[in-house]
Amino acid sequence: MDKKIKLLAAGLLTFTAGIAFSNFAISDVPSKIAVVDVQAVVNSSSQVQALKKEQQAKSKEIVAFVEKARKEVAATTDVKKKQALEEKYNKELNSKKTAMDKNYAQKLSVIDSSISKQIENLAKTNGYDIVIAKGVVLYGGNDITDAVKKAVK
Image (cartoon, rainbow, N blue to C red):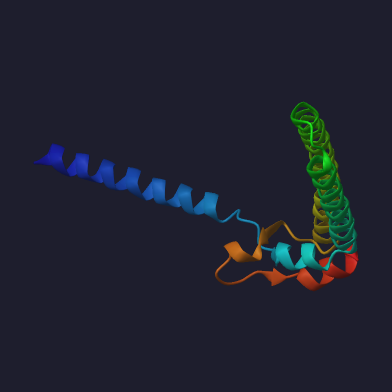
């Protein structure tokens, strides 16, 4: 019976020590947390608006190119020439689309990096330890969306 009490006391002591250490580890959680609505920031960014306009203009150019190519192919009566024209225009169209997509992705990456840097700078300036996307947080955190919008414009 004496061994069981000693074993129970040792187990209880170990359990209590474990709880104490885990509470100590949890007490070091950062206390200043901010949230930001990234989608709202992106939508209000002047860089994003300019990129959208640029993409719309390039899309119109591609549509005009396709219409011109269709007319030229339709006007050709020789089957072999028609086939050669179709292949030529398809290659050219694919090349234009690939270049447009690559350019868009590159510019979008630069904008994303810029917005992330603005959020980071604002967080550091205001002493925030963590910034979390607003859609992920159910409750709490200081909303810095408007400040980031102003910084990004």
